[in-house]
Length: 304
Image 1 (cartoon, rainbow, N blue to C red):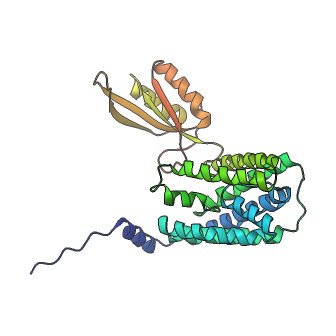
Image 2 (image 1 turned 90 degrees about the vertical axis):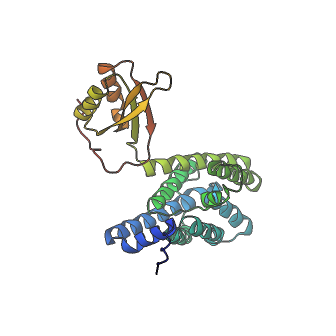
């Protein structure tokens, strides 16, 4: 009697089984809790100590919440939670349960902190200072929560949900949504506040990158050269970086190419170019920013 073969598990089932067999460590859980608390607090300070008292908004659901709170004369925390709930559901369906739980926790913490901080005196009434420091704190708070595995704004979650139904990318959907929100601020508050809000959004956006990537940003380098072995050895000896040789083929000549691949820090980019000048001045070099580096031989050494 033949047995009916068992169906292969779906990718979702594989991920679920991995999570069940690899419970989160206590140290990792503690780190996530600290990041959530700190990120939510920093975000709330940016709102209540800088932006809201000066009628400056951010993009996304936070901006909508500030506008509705101002028009209805109700607490901001109420709208921050209500408007984000549908997006948390989208996040649960699109990304997973853990993301949804972390995001809900972060939003509840952030909303509670806005209630606690609501009656404090604003740190400054200077619009430019409020814009700069408010945007910086918002971006720092969002970045910390993202590092904990969650989010403080549901705009991008919605964009991911609709990107397959609309002929636009996630970034374009988020941009259109925020242009509408920041434009609305011009009618509700004033057009100078709308322009300050746009600056706040830009500062927060760039700060998120700094928090996620770090100041000493890593870079990936691809080198096509006639002296790949010499250059690869020099990178390992003089920069202390690991090197991988990739095999390519010239489209025009059909000749085989040995491509040198390595990861360096931003401060080592000039030294890498010096190495190329020493061994092959005509070498082709392509450098790109990368968000994260794990494993491998990526250790600091004295540059000489």
